[in-house]
Length: 278
Length: 99
Image 1: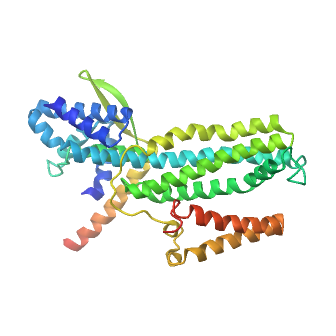
Image 2: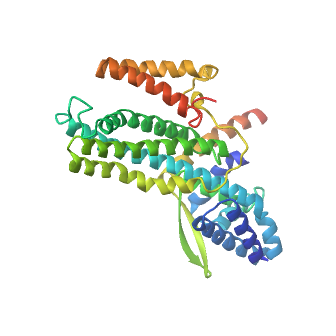
Image 3: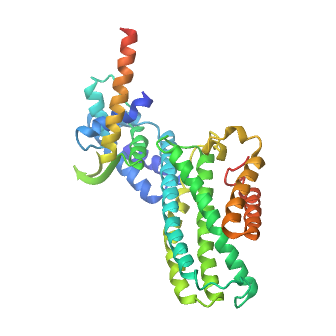
């Protein structure tokens, strides 16, 4: 009877996307528990006391999905930290080596795109990864999270990871276009390596199924700005203006305009997937 | 009961590193059966506490079976102390009203 129960539990766990390693652990613990119970109460009573396989599998899958997603969020942010250090090293390296004209690369368009990528993509990575981290910290210790909430966390981490990876590509292209390929190649590898390590964890986090009940929070919950929820574009303009003012002080009016536009474009493009607006 | 599950589990494991069945038995035994947890549902809670860094676990072999033994981490000990204080404050306040 216990073996039949474990087979049912295994099927339910597979059905809910629980991977082989986690399944093996759960089944080993359940087998040990059931046999201890059976020694005292008999197999039938042991199974009754342990509980039905299906609801238990649902609860286990939900908990695993939550734990894995939150861990992969932390790992993503840590990986992006290394990417940021590599980018910082490039900025120091390029300080007196970068040409004044971004169109002076071997291919004008590629050099321009790489320069824009180096300006904008790290910001997308930082904002998306930061929002994912903020949500994970807010939700830690709250038990199994609903599917929608885990989806938001996963999307924020995925966008951050993709932007981080594209930052490394931009570094590489910039190095090639402006004649610093070998030293920049080393930095690009350092930038992208931790993201490659994190990628499988992020991919596997979406496998176990969480319950669909419950809605996901949005950025206004994250930042305690509930009054702005009804006017998300006002929030977007305020953020864009702030970014533009900082860029104006540091880089001049052209980059300030670019920064302001980029924030608004990103809000329009990534607003819904990243739960910045409903 | 569910709100105090973490306190119960951490307290039981604080006495000695333990495994799922023994944790439930310890809680049941300490309360003369008054707290009789549903057996299977202890595992999601243990995984959650482990995921939060409050517990660590490792495999041993007992009676020819693989057994996962849980122990408190340093963070788990600190959190347990905090939960115990919260519980003392709460139960003291309730006691003051009902007695």
